[in-house]
Image (tube, rainbow, N blue to C red; front, side, top):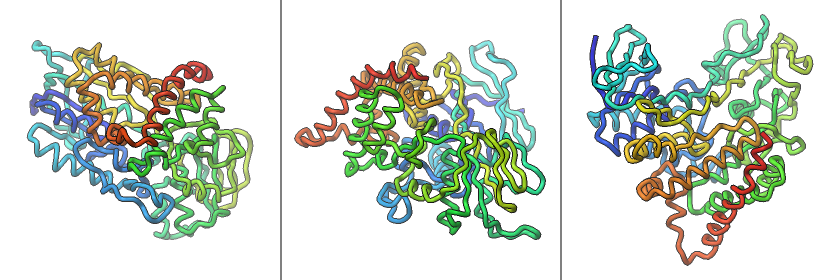
Length: 481
């Protein structure tokens, strides 16, 4: 049995764990050990369907030290004119490069892929006040005893459910053909006894389902050959408002001012979303229906136009069973064309966890601190771990943001994010770090606005004024939860 010592043990080499490790490496002289069940870093991106991309620009995703992408703009497709969105393959290559070219060569990082973290006791401490746990290889069973001198970092709380690792909650009868989005690009491999399908049914209403519909359309499927099961309609963030370049200042910073004005002036949460739609912050696919869901899914206007071309939308609640010629729904039975290919997109993009303190003595529980920026939250947590003083003060700077369960939850998530940002602004070192961080897509741009630029200064003044008014109105909107 091997025995090692480390300062920080990070459980999970996904985006959050990698972002934490990268900043901790910069801000301290600590030794870091990373353990993960997968064979390479990147977390759920290793299991994602091949045509997945980021929702928002590559420019502020990944780890703080290493740029993702080249800050180019797409000139074709539904994202044309907007900053590039890294594909799943690009993200996997990126995280592997960060591990192999940045973390491991430092000499202060050890990495255990294809391994489990095992701790038999809730707290297992040796006589020197150091945590003891084990790393067990999934392939050989070899056990490594780890003495953790400082803290164990749980980077698994962000882990989403993805189609490839998800078990559907509905029954599938013999003769019905169900695939995950991962299998769509292999449909050209015609198998004996299986014809290439001509009719498709996408099951699910989230971003994965939207990606599947768009993939089918862009690869030649006719809109009338696609059925789409939508248990709930969703509000969507307009990607135009998330662009990092100064040329989009009016949309990004101006759009944020508009969003806060909507929160400040709204009489209800539905009214807030309608106001955000009117100013271009929010989009919905069917404007005749009032959405009841919001999970930060981000799309372009071009993508919404593609999605609107599919008109056979089935709204009868969740699927209970798939039969060869019918869907059994919560609100009735729907006849379907025999031979339809069903695409399961019902995995939840976010595995909702109970809120807990981030700093817990010898344990750090990475959580969302600024919605929806997972990697910035993780990197910021590492900075605060090194420079933030005692746990009580650190937790004052790191109030976890609850992920929205309904529309009113967006108001609560925005409120907590704003409270955190105000606390960060009062800490000079943290404020300066955030301003220079590539994971904050807008802080440096806002800080560098010319004082003589009257138009941009007016937008900033409106942003500050609307923030105060929004916070005053938030309790009313949150009360609708």
